[in-house]
Image (cartoon, rainbow, N blue to C red; front, side):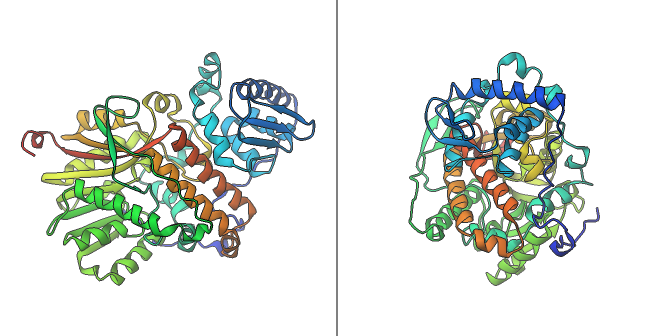
Amino acid sequence: MTLDKTRPDRAQNPNPSQGVPPLEQLRRGPRTAISAAVAKRLFHAAVGRLAVTVVDEPSGKTYGRGGPTMRLHRPDEFYARLGRDGLIGFGEAYLTGAWDAEDLAGFLTVPAARMATLIPEPLQRLRAFVTPRLPDHHRSTEANSQANISHHYDLSNDLYALFLDETLSYSSALFDTSTVTAGIGPGSVGDHLVATPPEPSDRPDPTQHNVDLAEAQGRKIERLLDEAGVTAGTRVLEIGTGWGELAIRAARRGATIHSITLSVEQLELAQERIAAAGFADQCRLELMDYRALGADGAQYDAVLSVEMIEAVGAEFWGTYFETIDRVLAPGGKVAIQAITMPHDRMLATRDGETWINKYIFPGGFLPSVEVIDQITRDDTSLRLTGQLEMGSHYAETLRRWDRRFLAQADAVQALGFDDVFLRVWHFYLSYSQAGFASGYINVSQLTFTRENQQENP
């Protein structure tokens, strides 16, 4: 397939907040008034069961059971947006400044822990009728996928460098390797490892947080390489190049790497970083959709992918794993890092559009570990043989990114991004941190071998 090798030009984009859709104006009328009244009643009922404090500033009234504080500056707008667009409207009301919270992640963590029960069950059954569907142009088809990826990853390499560590790793770090063994439970399919929660770091200067974060990102990558058995001479396929750190570390072990991406910006910088590290001869980087793999008959001893399955889309999970199965050489191993959600929540939210879809990751959707296990068993010869659950480490990773992003606000604006973009990204990072801190979402390193390898590893 032919891929577009041009990058977005912010000078040609009339919206200074690259990638941020314009906020819709509220439409007044009976329908808005009724939905706002219903939303207000449901919101007050939910808050009344939560350890939070909600301050209605115009009236001076306070709601909730005490805890992290949310301040409603324009409650009429807040309830109107919430009533019209649900959780998307909740996030959009933050973007317009209708509400705020000093500890945004702390506040969002409380309802995230109770997300499945905040709305009465009879109303939850109506979700399919009121939740907007994912737009067709955001489906992760071969025609759409590059645009979906470009929307987020081609914003600006300089932007990401402002808040990531020196490895430019944009995925969960692993702060230490101490683990406990857990049995079957939410987000697993059997006995598995759970990473011990990391100690939070509160250095006075958030720009100095990168020393141990870089070490933790390296630890994450090295563990994946170990799980996939990458050594000298290993033929490695990486699906989702990022900015090249995994390829560099695999090459350092003596492997040869074929890495594919759909991001023009990432491809260019990854090539520069790999060449500077002295591994250009061992690494082949391509702008390629994963579905095009295997056309040349190439086989790989190890397939790795870090937080890329989230962009595949539910309807293509089978295709993704079938592709990996097709190009994996006999005796090969697969190691991926995947953000997941509980199976019941995945089923309840499948096919709907979320705030994250609209503003951050078009076409993205989180699988469950259970569905990954089911698809690989039903459609491939791959079998899930190892899992390290590390959601608490992602919460800490996001906390550090958010602190540094806010500390670099002036530098972000100097790149051409405006105040709305800053609020979008602070909400995104805090919202994500809350998801991992509450356990509503999780992240795991998953290892796969072929079915006939399990008896003779």
